[in-house]
Amino acid sequence: MALQILLNFFLAVVWMFMTVSFSPAGFAIGFIIGLGIIILMRRFFSYRLYTSRAWAIISLFLLFLKELFLSSIQVLRIVIKPNMNLKPAIFELETELKEDWEITLLSALITLTPGTLVVGISDDQKRLYIHALDFDDIEEAVSSIKETFERAILEVSRP
Image 1 (cartoon, helix red, strand yellow):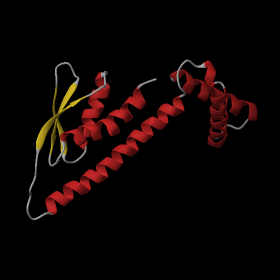
Image 2 (cartoon, one colour):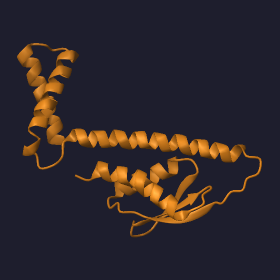
Image 3 (cartoon, one colour):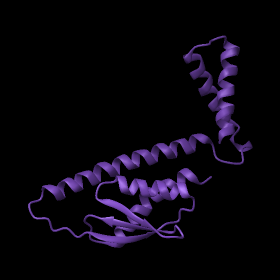
Image 4 (cartoon, helix red, strand yellow):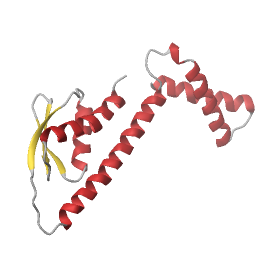
């Protein structure tokens, strides 16, 4: 991936020299043309294009913002209600993530979402213990986290 980014910057600089346009606009045009060349040459790379990973990172960020907004509204409803019939619980989430940074990112995303908190990680780093402020179904909570955050992290990290 780093090779592709460097190649794209190199092609942009070559474009600037060929057109004798040493401006940010000239670099941007060269970068876009270089990206097109890299896309045309994608079969010569043994791994996916860096643009797909960049898109996966942007998608993960937008997913986090959506979940942050929705859970904030849910916590606001809980706080505003006159009678608090909360059902807090701690449940276990078995994860497919392997790398330390993937597990850390998943834990941070869960903890930063209002109403949930990662209280512990097992010694083998396969299970996360999560406290939820109010929920009804454990399977639904586990599948929700697996289908949103874990899947998005896997798209970012896997080749």
